Amino acid sequence: MNVVVDAARPGVLADFWAALLGWHVVIEDDGEVDVRAPESDGWDLDLVFVPVPEPKEVKNRVHLDLASRTPAHQAELVARALELGGSRVDLGQGDVPWAVLADPEGNEFCVLEPRERYADTGAVASIVVDARAPGPLAGFWARITGWPVQGREGDVVVGLRSPTGWGPWLEFLRIDDVKRVKNRVHLDVAPAAGEDHAAAVTEVVAAGAAPADLGGPALPWRVLMDPEGNEFCVLTPR
Image (cartoon, rainbow, N blue to C red; front, side, top):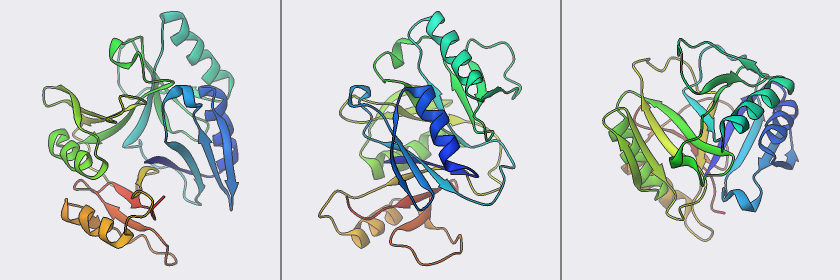
């Protein structure tokens, strides 16, 4: 599974995130730029930045939460983000212990205060998805990723995590806003090497996904929507 970010300047955005997280750029191809965590972070996902002409219009429905080890480390991460070209963002969060920021293209993210839950995640604590019904949406994603539900805060937050126990959480946060435009941040999933792509797509649709018609040329992967309309791709086996 990868996290894919639409970007006006993929290289610039990739450099920002690589420097902020302490990761490195591994692929630059046809405008796409991939950023990968060191093995010690335990994240086998990439941050993938792809070129798009459309500007960002609304708050993203998918964002990253960054982990911190101490209050001093949290302050250090915030300062580094601002120095690299990030900015503070007021989403009406009020007086909270975490910092809400945006990268150079306005993609929101949070730098969390130290929390025991994220002590072993590496630089990224969680991939957070806005959801009108976190439980059912988490159930869908658990089914297609194989990541079981590992945490729940009432009907507000439901969290999945890789069975390996490494890397970030995938959390679904209850929010009342309705999705209005194509997401600028989305997830990609891929069957394992040797599996049948068409069969994998059929299984994902059977789990509750629907086709997403975004126009453009035919692609080797399939673009679908989850039960709340969030776009995602089923890549070819790898």
